[in-house]
Amino acid sequence: MRLLGTTILLLCAVFLSAQDEADYYSLERIPIPEEIKLEVGGMDFLPDGRLAVCTRRGEVFMVSDVGESATYSLFARGLHEPLGLTAHDGALYIAQRGEITKLVDRDGDGTADVYETVQELPLTGNYHEYHYGPLIQQDGTMMTTRNVGWEGRGVSKSEFRGWMMQYDPATKTMKPYAAGMRSPAGFGTNLDGDIFVAENQGDWIGSGRITHLAEGDFAGHPASLRWSGMEGSSVELQEDDLNDEFKTMYRAKQELDGLKLPAVWFPHGILGISTAAILADRTEGAFGPFAGQLFVSDQGQSKIMRVALEKVAGAYQGAVFPFREGFSSGLLRLDFDQAGTLYAGQTARGWAATGGEEFALERLKWTGKTPFEMYAVRASTEGFDIEFTKPVAAANVKPSAFTIQNFTYIYHHKYGSPVVDVQANTITSAEVQDDGKTVRVTLDGYRPGYIYEIKVAGLRSADKDRLLHDYGYYTLNAIPGGDSSSTEVSEELAQIRQSTKRPTTMPADWNGTFDEHITLESALGMRFKQQYLTTTPGAKIKFTFRNPDDMEHNFVLTSGKMGDRVGLAAADLGLRGAATAYIPDMPEVLVHTELVAPETEDTIYFTAPSKPGTYEYICTVPGHYMVMRGILVVRDAASK
Image (cartoon, rainbow, N blue to C red; front, side, top):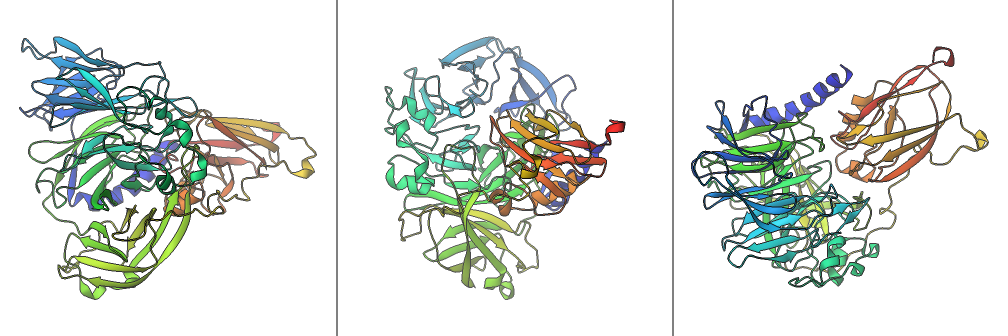
């Protein structure tokens, strides 16, 4: 009941934001028969309107009349965790763990009778060696991506792990296309056919992001460079070319030819934690006012973001905005039907998601109403041109309506990165342009290689609408016609500030002894392995938190039944959260560990509360606290 109450509180917070979003984009759930575990790994619409879905359990279903009266038929089974499906020329192409597979219903009975191995790929058996795709290009070639393995860090122990590969059916040959990926769960093309790949936070990956990849590009994770000298590779960098001394990817780019900067960074915990599908809006307005832009799903936070790109100095950069929350599970796949309705295939088993359900299939429809939003942000020589979806009320346009600050991430072998080198930007002017929809914001000082947080307050449209979402993040890789020289990261800001509530040294008055050594571990699915701990009032505790999971977690002990209050406060930290390990500065936080990277641990020393009672502990990483929690019961030794 405690967990249920927690979940209800979080869902209420999400529901309030999703309520307004629902005025413009309505969310509908597609019923799934109880006997089917539709953990969506890939999906694609067929020309006849049916939806083909592969599941992580190795099945392929055909869904007809996709809506309230949807019917499901089993098309294939026995596949090895397929995480991608594409319909092409009367067949289905599946990315299994160890191959691309072609499925064909040759006799027309509704089930596949041909399972053809199109291309094999080597495996070591490491659980993290996922395989995604295929994305079929206009020339008929197929692109797939391969995760690196995981052994406390990303490793590439079988050929071309961490690469995007290109298969040519005409010649039946596979060649390496681009390197430097860690967990490229989703990729797609924009309207021009350029490929963008999504990436998740991890070692060498400070935060989620999307990157434009052309042949020969290196996206930043060095494990894949083990194979850069192999036949067919046009990537020339070597593993030992990378080190922590560059500090930022932008600075590394100045010295390393072939390194590709992310087109858009997604601030961790604010705009997702597990970046997934990338889908261009090719509906020509049937899905609303964002035709041509990219929609990017997030598996961990059960939501969709929107990306507006531009090219500066020949390379992509742009802005990401919130779009739609409130989905039931983790959004791994997106696709449009012929009518311009967006379908979301979802899964969460082992990859926990804020939506709460193990799997789901839902669709999003435009209601016909246009929200008042920041439509796009474009870099100018001295600031930004911010375009809105509707004409703005000129009387509200003034510098004080905008708040802009910039920051970056550390480029290093460690897992993730705090937000570092934060600088506020002084806004000298804000002027409405001739189109009535664009505001030119001029800054006093402007530097490339940073992510710019843009917040808008008090601005109304000409017809008095409020902004549906009032913030976005622009990745500035280059200033139009401006300086692109290297930038340095402040050494002071490159370190996570230590808190007095994280006592890592045994107090001197303990005289080298303690009463208890409590060890707590994380578990798969964003859980603590132990949800119930006990101690006695005033006990001297050596506390070790171990994290064998493959994502970051922390331990935060609260001053009572305060898990919800602290968790919500951490979620509200926004950009400051990523700079402070998601620890809110509040009396309800008693002690905490650092943000513990995968396969590592942190030890702290503290004295148990003197008052007997129940003290909740949680992980405050955004989206985790609803399920990652437990209780420390302090009770007298006589009643223990």
